Length: 170
Image 1 (cartoon, rainbow, N blue to C red):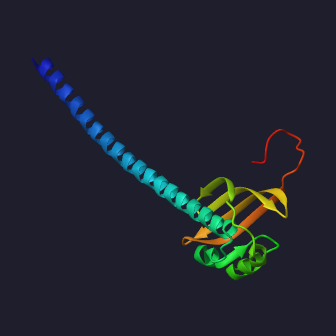
Image 2 (image 1 turned 30 degrees about the horizontal axis):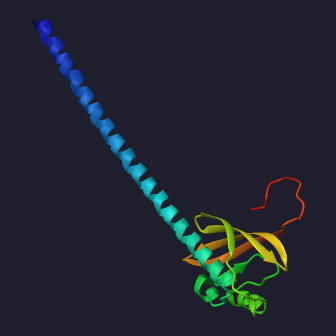
Image 3 (image 1 turned 120 degrees about the vertical axis):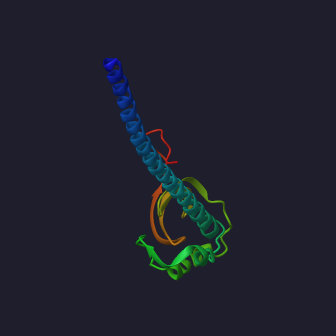
């Protein structure tokens, strides 16, 4: 009888320890779940920010370069606008002054944006364009701050008539 009683108490002890362990595991799992939920929410928030930034840059690019609407600079560019293209000065007004003679009497066009990507405050556009009567591949990179474009880099490359491979630039 004492042996049975001792075994019974041992089983209860094991169950209590397991319950306590399961309770600790449950708390750890809940903490991890909460952390994962916060992480997922931050990814969702970042994804939403990336999408918003991409839409804004695409809208600016079409309105400014496609529609030849210089007032888009006032709407989309920040008070400070840093330009990394060596042929253009810094500032929103400088950009407007640079393109104004180019846009005069130029027809509206649909900008041929082939790719758009964003990572945080940076947005990239890959564009098939025409520059000086020649087909070009353009990559424009914009930095966004407070929902305004505040910095710009670009690379423009002429599309060759012959290529060393069968891949297109687009």
